[in-house]
Image (cartoon, rainbow, N blue to C red):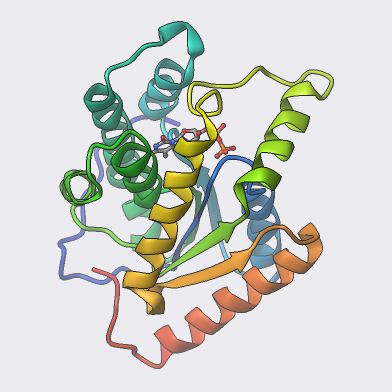
Length: 237
Ligand code: TYD
C-alpha cells in the first residue's frame, strides 16, 4: 500500500468500525485464528481489513524485517521498543484509523499488548513505560475487543519447533530464540493486561483444536458487537 497521510480522528470521536486485536505468545496459533476470524466475519457481511504487527504498511513491513532478522542481533531493548512503536504508529495513522472511520472491521494480528508483554515484561523495560509509549504512538486508540490466546509455554514451544522444522520453515526469529523464562514473563503480562480490563478482553485456551477455538472467538466478537450496539460505557476512544 502507499503511505498516505491520514486525517486522524480526534480521541473523543468514536469511529463507526469495529476494531479487534488478536494477542498471544509465539506458537499460540494467533495468525491462523486471525485469518479464520476474518473469513467468518466476511461471510457475515463485514468489510474486513486483516492486518498484522509489526507491519501493515510499507514502512511497517520494513521495520518488521529489520527488528526480527536474527542477523541484526543484538538490538538494544529500548531501540527495539521504539521500532515496534514506530511501526505501530504508522499502522494506526495510515491504515487502522482510516479503515475504522470508513466503517470497516479491522482485525489485527498483534497490537499494543504485544509490546507491553514482549518489551515491557520480556525485555524488562517496564510494562507501564511501554504502555505509555504506545498510548502516545497510537493516540490512545484501543481495540473494542482483544482476543487473548493463552497457551502453556511447553505447548507453545513444541508448536514453535514444529513450525521451524517444517519443510520451508524459517529458523527462529529474535524473539523465538529467547529462553523459556522470557516466554513465561510474556504470558503473565498478557494475562495481567486482560485481568485489568476484563470487559475489553476474551481470554481463550488456545491449546484446543483450531475449529473449536475459532467458534469461541467468533462468539466473543458477536457478543462485543451486541454490547457495543447497546452503548456500553467502555466505548473505544
Ligand atoms: P511473527 O512472525 O508475527 O510471530 P507470530 O506469528 O508469533 O505473531 O513475529 C512477531 C514477533 O515480534 C513475535 O515474536 C512477537 C514480536 N513482537 C514484539 O516483540 N513486540 C511487538 O510489539 C510486536 C507487535 C511483536
